[in-house]
Length: 326
Image (cartoon, rainbow, N blue to C red; front, side):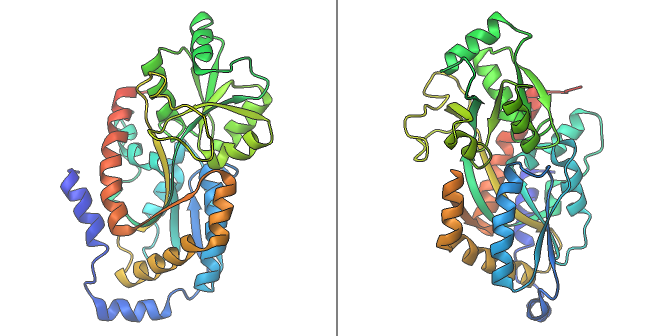
C-alpha cells in the first residue's frame, strides 16, 4: 500500500458522506456495551492506558466499556481480531505505535500480513512518550555506558525483555543496540507486563519500557532508569539523559491511540471522537496519567492521521533494518 493511499483511506473514513444515515446511527449509538481490545497481556503499557480511558469513556457515553486482553505475536493476534470485527463501533482497539511495523514484520517472515494499516481508522491519540531504558534497582549499572561496556565484556550474559517480536519494546532496543554496539539478547514475552515481572525477578536485565509501565516501579525504588529515547527533557524525570544526548543515535516515541475498524460509520466515529475529546480533557484522568509518568498527549483523528503516517514510515524503516527474526 502506498503512503498516499494509506492517508487517503484514513481520512475517507472520517468524511461526512452519508450524513443523514450516519446521524440516525449516532442517535442510537451506543446502544450496548463497547469492547476495547488490548492486543497485549494484562499489566503492560497498553493495558495500563486502556483501563482508565475505558472507565472514563463509559461515563461519558453512559454505557459499559469493557477492556479485553488478546495478547500474542507481539500484538498481531488482538490487532487482527479488531481488523476483522464488525465495523459498528462496538469493538475498538487500544494500540501502541508498534502497530505500524507489524504488517512489514509479517512480510519479512514470509507470512501474509494478519492485517493492513488501512483496515483501521484513528479516533484519538492518548499518550506519546519516549521509552525508558530501565534496569532493576539492585543492578550494578548506574549509567548507559556501564551497561554497554558490561554487555561487550560478557556478550552472552545480558538479556532484555519485550512485549513481543517487532513490538514497541523490541524496536527501540534494537535501535539502541545498533547505535551502541551493546551485546544484549532479546527475550520476547506476551506483553510488557510479563517482561516487567521478569525484570524484577532477575530473568532479564534490562528493557525499553514506556513510562506508564515502569513509572510506578521507578517511584517505589524497584527499578532505575538510565536514559530515555526522546529528543527533549522529560519533566517527570528531571536530569534523566536522552540516548541522543549521550551520543547514541536512537529515538523512539511510544504512542497509544484508540482506533476502530475502517468501515465504521462516520457518525459513530464522530460520537467516539467527541467523547474522547471530553475524556482526555478531564482533570481527574489527566492526574491518573500524570501519576503514571505518562501525561496525556491528545490528538484528534485528522491531526493524528497525519502524525501516524510520518511515524509509520520511521517504524517500518526500523523493522526492515532489524530484518527477519527467527
